[in-house]
Structures are given as structure tokens and as C-alpha cells.
Amino acid sequence: MSTSRAAMFTPPMPAPAAQPASQRRRMTLWGSLLHAPPSFIAVIMFMAVFTKSSLHSIPEDCASQLFVTSKQQQQQQKQQVEEQQQQQQQQQVEEQQRPQQQGHVGVYWRGGRLLQRVTGPGFRSRIPMLDTQEILPVTAQTDTLTNMTCTSHGGVEIMFSSITLVSRLRREFVFRTVSDNGLDFRQTLLVGRAQHVLAQLCNSHSLHDLHAARFQEIDELLRAGLQAAAAQSAPGFEVLGVRVSQPRIPEPIMASYVALEEARVKVMVSAEKRRGMEIEVETERMQAVAQAERQAAVSVIYMSQLLAERQSQQQQEPYLNSAFIARERAAVDADVYRMEREAAANLLRLTPEFLQLAWTQAVANGTKFLFGSGLPNADPRLVFSVKEGSARREGVR
Image (cartoon, rainbow, N blue to C red):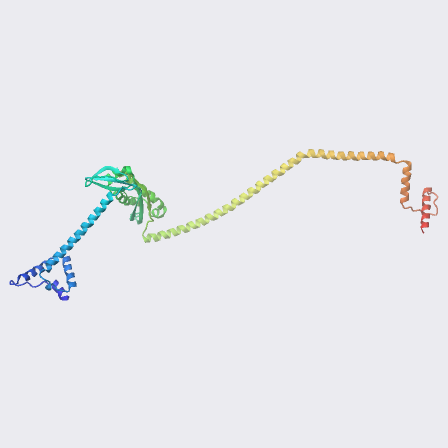
């Protein structure tokens, strides 16, 4: 193996003039190898290593066989490239021959000139070998741009990892848009101008605005900028929406920004706590005021009710007095009438006999006490009564 390599890199000594024709052909082969390209020499080395033979043992026709092999390889590669191109052309032809789907339109060229013919979905006819067709969508399409960089107003470079663009081409402006901007009009109107519009947007805003303060406005600002730029050359091209990812900023600035955000959050938390305490105090004050107002309202209602009752009583007082007077007068009149009737009845009842009877009953029912040995001045009726009572007592004994 080492001998063959040394023979490959060491050219042979020049042959004498009396060498045969076969040796002269070998010398010519070595000279051609010395001036051959490096790739060809590498192929020969590769074949020599795996065949384990030196160049001196190669037959006279080996060199010509190697050249034939390399030419065959080149021809095979060329054939493969031609086959790939034919397949791509065939795919394009098949795509052109497919019927147009809903939401797509077809545009046509004849001899390289764009025709004003714009067809809708379905099967369409064209002149073979002269007309070419391209199918364009007229519905909303989404394009995504990645790793878009820009510089803020303060000179800090930031990167947007992804920007999603939603656009649509109106059908009545297809011919004008393709005529002015070509088939790759989305690349021209969106991708080509998005970087420029984004750079202008970043240059007019600070890093704080782009990263936090006005980040929610970037989508609309970028969409308006792209729409204004596209309206000049493609009036029928509409930018429906833009969605921008959160920008990435350098690590040192990000650390400072995080520290600043933490301090700002602490201030916001303390402010919220103070605000909560103020709201709590204000709530207590409002509750106290509401309770006092409620009590005052209740007092007013109670006083109004009491005043109404007093007024009602005052209004009822004359009627009550009149009723009382009438009631008392009626009672007095009744007593007078009763006494008069009793007096009249007594006049008829108090006869001498009745009085004597009443006197007798009163004396008989009462206890009599007599003092002395005799009754000289006593009423005979009393004496009789006394004697009769003494006799009765003695009889009882």
C-alpha cells in the first residue's frame, strides 16, 4: 500500500529514446495525471487504495478506461439533472392543467405578455405552447417572517422572533397588481417592506415603549404602515392583520429592565396597598355617613309621625271634651234624678207607723246599757223592753 502511494506521488524517471511505444504511452499518462484536476487525482487514489494495486501494474488501456468512467458519471449526473427538471416542468404543467379551486383565480401570459384575462374557479381553455397560466389565491393568506431586527430610538438593537402577516388580494385588482409587481407580489409588498416599516417604527419609539408600554400598539402601527406602503403600488392588496411576538433585547439591558420592572412592581404594590387602605377608610366613612343619614331619616320620620299623632289628638280634643262633658252631665243628671226619686219615695214611705216600726227594730237589735237602781225617767217602752229581756234571760237560765 505504501509503495503504491509513493509511486502515485513520485513521477517516474524520463525514459531513454529507445523505449518501446507502450512505455511512451505510460509516460504520456503520467504527464496527463500531473496536470489533471485534484478531483480526478482523488478518484484515482481512491480506486488505487481499494484495489490494492500500484499504478505500475495498471494495463495499458486502464487510463483510457478511467477517463471513460468519469465521462459516464458526468453523463449520468447530467441525465439526473435533466430528469429532475423534466419532473418539475411536468408538475408545473399538471398544476396548470388542474381546475381552479374556489378562492383562486387564474392569470394568463401569451408569448410573455400578461393578458387581462382573469378567470374564476372551474375548467378553462388556453392555447398550447403559447399561453401559460398561473393560479393565484384571492382569499386571506398568512405569511410569517422570522428573526426581524431593528434599532430603537435609544440605539438598542432588538429582535422579533416572528411576525405573522395576514393579507388578501382583491379579485378586481389582480391584473394591475400582477402587472406592476409580478407574481411574487407578496414578497415585494410584505416581506420586502416589512423590514423598512419596522425599522421606521423602532426608530420612532424607545425601548420601553417597544418592549412593554406600547407593545400592544405595534401590531396596528405595523399593519397601518404596510397598508399605506402597499396602497401606492397595489391598491387592491389589503393587509388584514399583523401579530408581532415579544421582542428580545440584549441580556445586560434585559437584566436592568427586569430590575426596573421589579422596582416598579414594588411601587405599584405599595401604591395599591395605600389605595386599598384609602378605599377601606373611605368605605368606613361612607358607612358611618350612611348610618347617620339613616338614623336622621328615621328620626325625621318618627318626629313627623309623633307630630301627626299630636295634631290628630289636638284635633280630637274638642270632640273628646264634649263627649266627657256630656258623659259627666248625664251622670250628674242621673244622680239628681235618683235622689229626687228616692226623696219622693221616702215621703210616701215614712209614715208614723213605719217610723215606729223602724225605731222598734233599731232598739231591739241594738244593745242597751242602763245604770242605776231605778228607771225614773226611762221611756216605758224601753223599760218594757228591758224587763222583757231580763225575763227572757232568766227563763233561759
